[in-house]
Length: 419
Ligand code: PA5
Picture 1 (cartoon, helix red, strand yellow):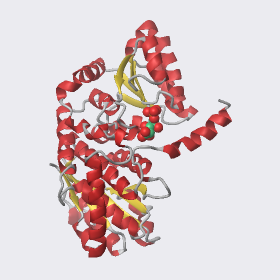
Picture 2 (cartoon, rainbow, N blue to C red; picture 1 turned 180 degrees about the horizontal axis):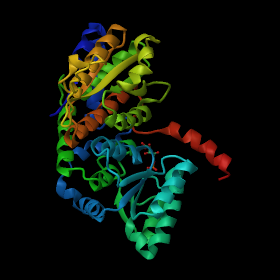
Picture 3 (cartoon, rainbow, N blue to C red; picture 1 turned 180 degrees about the vertical axis):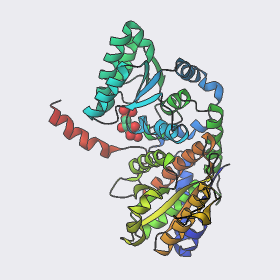
């Protein structure tokens, strides 16, 4: 176990009556989830994914290796849950990886044109990812990219296209069968935002060099913590704390990190939480911040603005790469008092100072600590977050696994497009 949830100070600030009441409700929700009796129980396949074995993933691993060994660019086409898991892990662990591009996550002619121009000069594989196989953003991007692939590689293009989609339904499945693309399946009982441990997330992550053994080890460690029926369970405590804070008038949760490299973990979390809890006019609004950068923009608001927020910090305790602040004989910048200290130590002090200041400013705070930045820690955290939002969603009485509200903009857009 590498991930630690520190909510001691937060819990001391709660009225005992709230703590007990809500703890009981959260307990019921926890059991509803574990017994697979709650709303959306047909979408609980994600709960079993941390128990996968390396040997179950042999084919996936081999295709990822083929892409990796080719040295070609991998273009992942997908949006929402079909994009954010891979993006979050790859950008956190392999920030300099230049062999991956993401497409189909918007409708920008500028970005897609740039990508198409770049790919004319490069060799590439395509991993098109869509559970429904009918989402318009990846659908459009795939049209352009597949045309380019056929233009460049002729018939061989079909070997370079890998589709990750539903087992039997959807246009992408039909097209893959017709064109002979290799395919991976998104299980029926796993929704997009819970799919990082399926081929949706794993193929791109492994193709960029992710360590499968460590991924599974971390996921299992997260699972082992999240199913514990006692007060040490971080998913349970986090869900309970969110519920108490909501009851106390908080409306916005800020997931704040002091490490820009893990910014996309917060983007993944925003989708997971936002789409799961924002229903029936309920739920907290998931926001994020990267400090210290945002302390110089949002810091003022967080310290003294409307008191309807709380903060959850995401902190990396140990850095494998670090820098020592150099001594300067002239010391004109007056920084010699920290000369010889590591940058991560200064960052740590910034976190401690911020936590205290925000707390004193009336912002409830708690912290998830990652022991270090690697596959084990990240996947442990992702699994804890998945369990936490499922438990929390049940405390609200919503189905955490559907997203009916996402259809509203699509309906209008399709009408305006003349479909
Ligand atoms: O979490 C979800 O279910 C959504 O965010 C989907 O992942 C997203 O809308 C993309 O859907 P699809 O994979 O069907 O293209």
